[in-house]
Image (cartoon, rainbow, N blue to C red; front, side, top):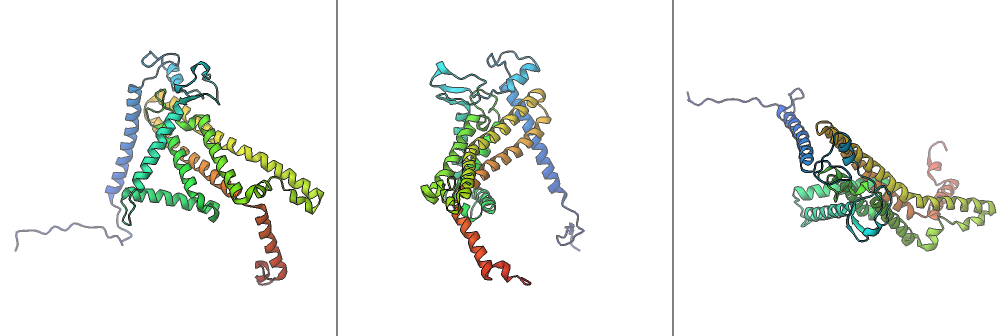
Length: 350
């Protein structure tokens, strides 16, 4: 008999439905969540020590009374701080919402940083694409294909040429939102979340507004696109039909100018409100509760980025559609049904 002893280790059969799940996996996941929560608390504590609150009319290092000063120091006025001011004599008031001032603001500087991070990250992840991709290329392709499928599922085949615009808007707005959750952004004067500044959100909304109107003119021509808002051809059906069509077209034209307002104000209001709530709770607790609010903000910020990019994509698709084409398709279906070749005539019992 051999001196060596064989030790059998029971292995759970994957095909056995009664096999107990592997406990290590659940333990590993819970450990990661605990480590993440502890990490967020440590980051908040380090940020509090490195960038302590100070009075709004003072400077870094001045004494700050708890809790009033702590709360006030975490509140950012709508107008951003000018990092480089090209006209200091005409600086806007801190309470101004929309400003027209030649300067490089804190939100603009932070947005440039975000743009550099997104561009460099995308280039590095997609550079030298191969048939056997690594983790970075897999991640990039997964994100792009998931967003592409989502956009095509919502807007249809007509959205295919505009998927890159949709993905670019989503990633830019997403990281513009998320950057505000990472210290020292919001803790120092020259760094602030771009989406919490209405001037930045208005600028992005105007870019979106320009894109879908340019695409409308490019696809339909000047006459075809303006005909969507001034349908003078409807007067061929009678004066009453023409007047009603012109009235509806005028309403649609006014709604076009409402689109950038809704795009910008929705994004600004949600991000600015979240920044204020997170700043106040973090300033008062520096503990466990901000972790849950940060998790909620991560989700809400992603939803806001998705709303902005989806609306931009849908507005582009609507802009390139012609009213005449829609009417033509309806007429063809009606004629086919009347001639007995349409879907309604082919159904049994009709």
